[in-house]
Image 1 (cartoon, helix red, strand yellow):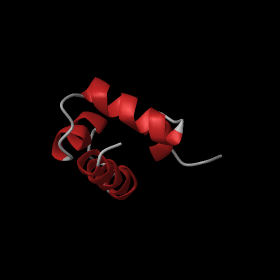
Image 2 (cartoon, one colour):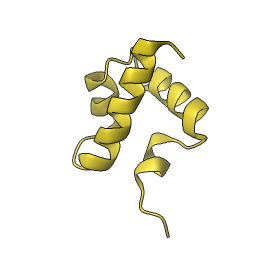
Image 3 (tube, rainbow, N blue to C red):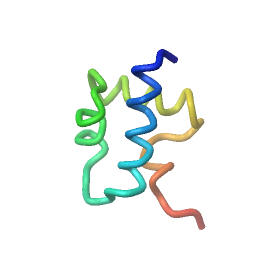
Image 4 (cartoon, rainbow, N blue to C red):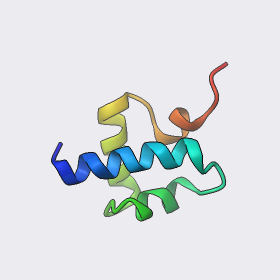
Length: 59
């Protein structure tokens, strides 16, 4: 993963947990991903979770 994508990924992680009112599509766009599909692909490759799974409380 390139440094720009890594920075976008980390920003998305923070927004997923810190801004639950934002949609995943809005977070993907705000973090500079070219589309929601690309965001899901990158996120799953790094965490083995979909963004919604990452955001959901454990339990």
